[in-house]
Image (cartoon, rainbow over all chains, first blue to last red; front, top):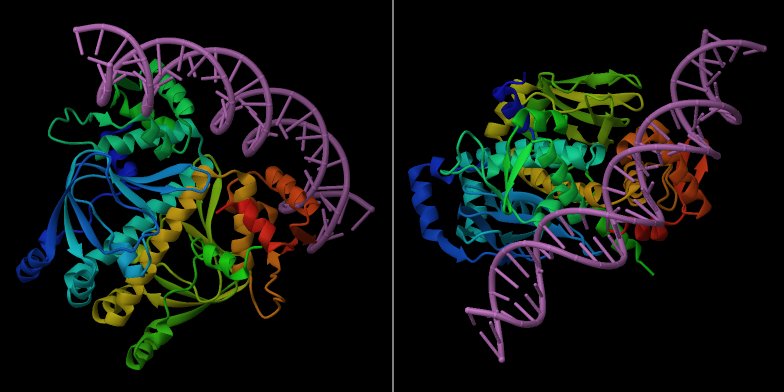
Length: 236
Length: 236
DNA sequence: CGCCGTATTGAGCGCTCTCAACGAGGGTGG
DNA sequence: CCACCCTCGTTGAGAGCGCTCAATACGGCG
């Protein structure tokens, strides 16, 4: 028997969680940020920005879900992350002085806060609290990406899908989540681009998981039935 | 015709270069680091540290080459990076307060400088120059890892090997390198673990590359013959 | 010279991709 | 309100890539 705690601990090696908390900054800095930030509302399927474009600021996702992806010359798409509430992005490109390396679009109607690039850079320079948060978060993200590379290089579709579903279950946790089982609402196309396979293969593998009672499918939504078995299958 | 410049620029999206320069810190900080650092010499094939272990300090590679890898439960190994002269590592685990997430061992006889964990953390807190360097370097590394995930998720062995050889050609540049063609000295086993395939498949693909005059093999060393064609094959 | 680890080559199998067809569901316009 | 279309999802068949197992060749070292 595998303990719930063990699974969660192992998952956190692959799970990108919000790690930058502007609300933990000194109050005066928070107030100042307020002055330099704007609220943004975007509709489902809207592209917030595209890879290659100039990074004009930092975004904080307040509500909704977004996908971060890279499009390749051959038309293939790789989804890198699904962002949910609390996630901060855009800061890395600004700090590294690069253009956006990935595109970001809305999976649902979303609500964001935008902080202007120039002001953000100033803030990083003068706020020790913020730059420390950034250092810790970036270092941790490094670990997560390393682990992900390992999975993509060494594991097959079944294992990758199992792991992905466990990760998405965490990402989709909200007030409706019962007993830790989230409703994973993601199109098959997006899911296949996240796992790194074709939609056909994804459908087949999902079918297999259903047969083994690892998951339950309701319409387009996926619910995990057996965390333990999925975890074993992911073999991480 | 693809320009040399274009290839180099594209490669830098996948190439981890030394980005932390202690010699660019203020002189007083440099002198202080001297007091807290030790020189280390290790022989070829020695393991410097293993994944899961406590991170007791930061290392700067002065001479030689090292490999960074993760070992999986099933015995498979994924090499994440090859470090060459100037590379700094160990800092990420310390900042994120994690144990080592990968093992590091020497591909050749190596010479390193070691900085104690405790002192390094103090230095990060008080040196704006260092923490800024760390922020920039971590942000850039993020981009590189993202790009690598894309490659591993979407590309086949041929493409991955082509890209890997181009990267290694940069890594192995030294005073003996003529016309930008380095001697890539890496065992087939290591190369296969870096590309993410079996040694058998690697041998076959190398054979194919030889037939197409993309590379030249002398003993165990590999030399690139056609950067352009390799680059096209990598399709990045 | 023999041994052992590394490299190469071959054969066969299984996984994943591609192409193709069909079904389901949602949106649009008549 | 219904017919149609378009997209998305599923299922099937076949091809090709990459893995595994097995045998052989090579090379350094004792």
